[in-house]
Structure formats: structure tokens, C-alpha cells
Length: 473
Image (cartoon, rainbow, N blue to C red; front, side):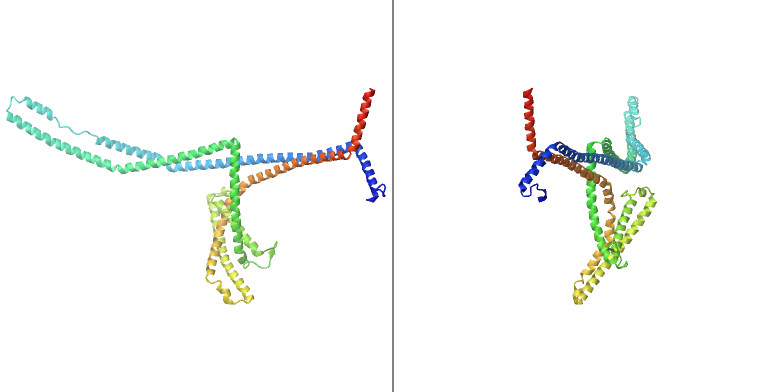
């Protein structure tokens, strides 16, 4: 420090001289220093602003890409639903309306029969055949014959009329009874016709309901085709909900896979060579992990073969025969793995008991004490572990459904997170640009404060010289 003193015996005076000379030097270097501060401010702040502009552009591009993907996926989803509804309508029409011409012909025949029967049942009662004219003629012959003869004739006519009327009425009642019997036999036909009509009404109501759903889907399709903001928000919320739900279910499946792994890792050491390690893991652990992964893979192919998921379009495009082969193959594979896991779970319990007995024997414990704690609960534990080992592979196979949902929704979720991160970086870059501008402005002001004395002296000299020039003028 003393080496920079001009007068070593007087350090304060030396420092004062250095400050004065530095102030004079910086005063004459004021313009270049201010240019340097401006250049540094423009370079740093401009760089951060360009970075903010780039992040803003990248975020907009990602939003537009995500928007297009959402629209395409939403339109494809709606088209698939509409196609399903039309397929339902086609199958329903082919089942319910295929026999409609025969049904209509049968209904027409039954209606014609009923109409004819009603007409025949509506006949009027028969009249007495011409007895009125006979009575009138006999009454005119009253003057030419005796009253006894005429009275006898009228009595006979009356008897004959009553007999014929009774006969006609009996015949009419017989015919009417037959018609009524025919009509009573038509009651089951009426019931069948009523049931057929109600079935037709039910099918028509179902078709109307399907048409209303199709109208709703068509409205959604029209809104999505217009790319309205409400449709984008609706699709975004739907995909976000699917992403969260699938993530939760996959987390539960990972927990189940962890339990499954620990259930078979110990007994797997009896089936594979011991002492060998790969990447720090024992071969038994790797084998157990491979078994769990195979169960997940078989579950994916099982769901693909029955059409629940569509992760592999090649499987969906196969014929039903080939898909049945894949279905039965994966079903047999899952059953085999679940049976193996159940047997390994039983073996695990025996190994655990053997290890416990060995540790107690090495520790000098009595054999009675080691066996007293197992007794009645060992069978329950073995059955529980065997059941768990058999059921867990089938539960893990269902992870294929939320896995497909996660894959479909993750693109939108990751795009939103990327956009949020890029936007945050852009805001930080803008903030840093303002900070650097402020820092260099403060540095320029501090520089001017350091050389304030020469500045004021120069201003005073400049003002006096300016006033002298004015007086001379």
C-alpha cells in the first residue's frame, strides 16, 4: 500500500493528491466513460430483451401448436363418438327394422280380419217374412167368409209368425255367438299387436335419443371447427383432468408394482444364481423386476386385443381372429405369471420363517420360543400372500388404460408447463434488462458524483466566459 504513496511520510496528503489527479483524469475522460456505460447498458439490457422476445415468440408458437393438437384430437374424438352413434343406429335399425315389411303385412292382415269380423257382427236382426201383407188380405176378406174361419186363420198365422221369429232369433244368436267367440279369440292378437307397438315406440324413442346425442356432438364439432376460445378452454380442462386422474392412477399402480416386486424378490433368489450383481442390483431383484414389467406389457397387449385401448394401431387394424389369438395368448401368460407369483409368495413365507429360525438359533434362542410365535397365524399369512401374488398381476394389467390416457394428455400438460417456464424466463429476462439499465445509470451518476468538483468548476468557468462574451458583444 505504501508503494503507491507519492509522499510516504505523509499518506493523507498522498491520498488527497491521488484523488485530485484521478478526479481531473476522470473529468477529461467523462465522455468516453459515459459511452462505455451506455454501451454496457445497451448490450446487457438489449440482450436480455432479445431473450425475452425470443421466449415470448417460442411460447406463442408452443401455444399455437398445442391449440392445433387440442383441436385435432378433440375433432377426432367427436368424430369417433359420432361414428359410434351411427354404428349403433345402423345395428339397431338392422335388428329392429329388418322384419318390418313382414310385420307390417301381418298387421294389415290381422286388421283386415278384425275389420271383416266387426262388419259381420254388425248385421241387423232378420224381419218376419211378409206376414203383414197376408194379414191385410185376410182382413179384406172379412165380409165374404165367417168370422170363425178368419179368426182361426189369424191364429194360425200368429203361431207361424212366432215360430219363425223364434227360429230366426235363435239362428241370429248362434251366428252372433260364433262371431263373439271369434272376437274373444282375437284378444291375444290384440295383446301381441300392443306389445309390438310398444316395442316399436321404444326403439323409436331410442333412435330419437341417439339423434339428440348426435345433434349435441355435431354442435360440439361445429364449435371446434370454428376454433372458438370456449372450445379450446373446454378441451384444455378435459385433457388436464385426464392427465391428473391418469397420473394418480399410475402412481397407485407404481405402488402396487413396488409391493409386487418386494413380494417376489426374496423367493426369486432361490431360482436364479446368487452372488451375481448387474449395475449394483442382484440378479434376483432384476428377475423380479423383469416379471413385473412383463405383467405390465401383457396387460397392455390384453387391453389392445379387446379394443379397450388403442396404443398400437397395428393391433387395432388386425382381424378379429388374430386379435383373439393375442387375447388368449396374453390371458394364458398372465395366468401363468400370477400362478408363479402365488407360488413364490408361498415360498417367500417359508424362506422368511427359515431365516428367522436360523437367526434365532445362531443367537442361542430356544426352539420352542421360535415356534410359538408362528403357529396359528402362519397359514393365514401364507394364504394372504398367495392370494395377493395371484391378484396383483391382474390389477397391474389394468394400468394400460390410465397409461394410454397419460400418454395422450401428457403432450398438452408438458406443452403448458413448457409455455409457463418459457414465459417465466421471458419475464425474468425483462426484469433483468431493467435492473441492468438501472445499475449502469446509477454507475454513471456515481461517476458524475465522484467528479462533481471539476464539473462544477467547468460549469462556473463556462458561465463566466459566456457572460464575458455577452458583455463584449
